[in-house]
Length: 444
Ligand SMILES: [Mn+2]
Image (tube, rainbow, N blue to C red):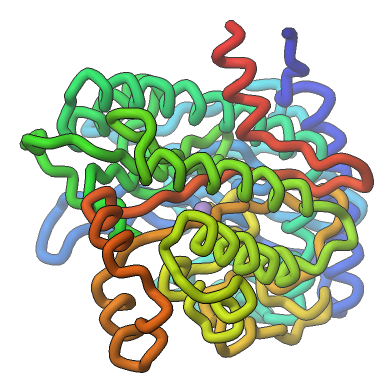
């Protein structure tokens, strides 16, 4: 299936939309123009070795470059954005190449040989967006990261332009391809480290290029939510494999989790199947106008039904939800905004003018409390895990009487199950970026 090239007509419309967003936000705040820094290369303490450079997402929203330390953008209503591209004269490193892609046509481009050369280009009264740096007080910025402006921009970032959605489809295909390679490596008997390498090779990413560190866990490791150990030894007995790993295109991330069993069937296989159905039912709730915390509540209902249905708890569905027992097995939020950041900013924002809607106290890990709009991209990632710390807590506070401990003992060696898709809210049927990508990959 041919895909529209995001670097062409979609990008031009994207810049047009960003110009409208900025013009409105800057006007509402009473500013003149905005300078956005890509960021600076950072170094290890007492060392000349740099950390991987991570570009300011505000910069990448406009300019699809990720290796641009020391570069700046200048945005002013009524004129094309300016890109002050930092290209040092340096024979030690390969300097970032001046891009020559079609997207540059949207910018007035000038090359600077040192970031300090940008200082002379900053117009009076400009505000600054980016990480502060030594000496910034002498650059004449009116304000640095003013919250009124940032709030408006962060609010707007949740709704993706057609260009951004196309980038996210490409990222999803990269991720799906790499997930298929990782599953194959698991079934071949590779260690966590070996699976990780297979994933990177298929995604075409270095570790630094991943949107977040891969979670690749065999057996009990799947119960550790952010497991990033990567054992080099393959365990003697292989039971389960949980992989939460992403990819990106032009900075736009995918965030995908799959759980695999070494052998089909059994109690764990039934749990996986039940989770697959529940996850798809939750993805179907992603629609313009849906209050995202309602999906989180629906997830607890689904988790309770699975726990009862699979004989993991002995109480009713209602009791499992009301007593908070579902949180013992599902202790994280149902998902989050996704975009230039894997946990895209602004999830708790009350509105474009600022303010926060914090998550309910019983669900403080829920990263998104907004109502979805058409074009909002979110993850849906229900899970059920067997985590000693939380099981012991339930045992201590009395909820343990409703837990079928023999079932828990049987499932604990598998760690847990999580399934995560990336879904676009629309006014009609949701677009499941992840399922579409897997379908396309396996059809190819
Ligand atoms: Mn996620």
